Length: 225
Image (tube, rainbow, N blue to C red; front, side, top):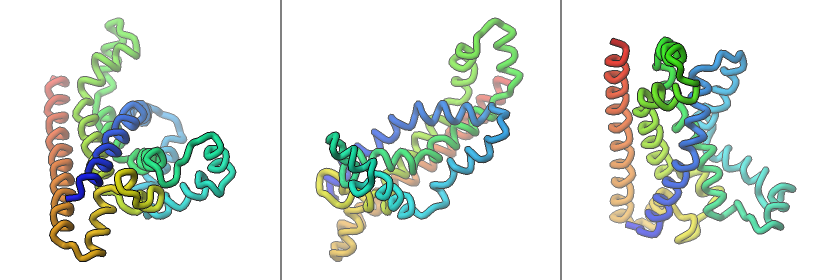
């Protein structure tokens, strides 16, 4: 096991989740309740990272923010280096993982009956109080599912991580990149250990998502009675 790569992967997964949680929560709730005609376009843009090859995301990240670009050169002059750095990895990880955080939360908020919101408003609760006291307690399984998917996908991401972060030990080498190196070097025993760790993480994340989805369904059914 490459413990240094595991540390980088866990750190990246934790930071990505912390950054995405408030952003994903706000965006997911808005998408769940808005009647704006442009919502399908926003949802299509949100889902784009699921369809595009990760290398496409990495390529345009380098084009827009690499040191050869105007913006990247200006950031470098300010001491901010986004290519081959953890900061750059975090930024691109947030972009790639946005749909994994938003989709489960959006479904959870969309499943909250609008009649409950109206009842809360009639009872004198403000929209903010309704969100905290009515909607969020019903949607929390979606939040946990989004966090689980974000962590699992971050740990397993390879293409965009390699393009943006490179392969710097202790800084940008993640577990998936280290696994690739082990296979290239025919260190199959170490590769097996890391591959099994990633498989176990993915299975655990999917189990958590399915479990919390069922919990959310039962919770909402009880609230509607």
